[in-house]
Length: 214
Ligand code: TMP
Image 1 (spheres, rainbow, N blue to C red):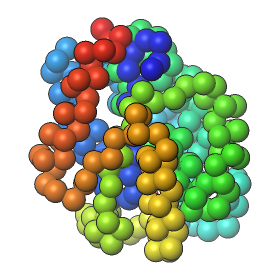
Image 2: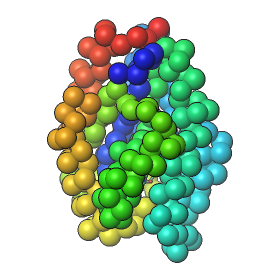
Image 3: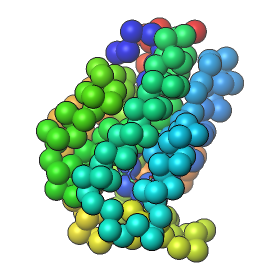
């Protein structure tokens, strides 16, 4: 557990519906009177937004996988120090759409850079900060990519990776979830959004009782 506040991250492959679910949880928590910060990686802060544009721009096909990993961590370091830690220190709840587990899955797994490199950078960028709870929304790859495509005219640089890449991302997530069952909650993302929302709430509600949130 973080010393103060409650740090909840959302993870999943593209099209798992995590952004919708994060917003729904944010609404519930605010309705319960809790101070909530909703943020996203990469992105979050204004500086992070500029880094996000580089990362997702389809024109940047030559981006080296190590440079890519460092950019994800640059965005994260800014978010952790500018927004996340100060909000947790005040006893608030932070909901973060993706965090270091994404880098473990996409760069460590998908790009083959491995866990150790990613975890070393995590310590530099984020110190000892770890999520209290990670909601992993699991979805079949084809169904997820079809959802990700719906409503968008073109895929971003990451969505457009091979099926093999996305397969390795999902396999890494499932390995991470199995290794840390107390933190990771695997939720089936295939059912309708209301059902998924209820499943997430049944994980979060009891955690609020024991967390130091105010
Ligand atoms: P989003 O579309 O969920 O906001 O995420 C942007 C893309 O960036 C998504 O395809 C996953 C990818 N990503 C990584 O490859 N590594 C990371 O560390 C993060 C946070 C995201």
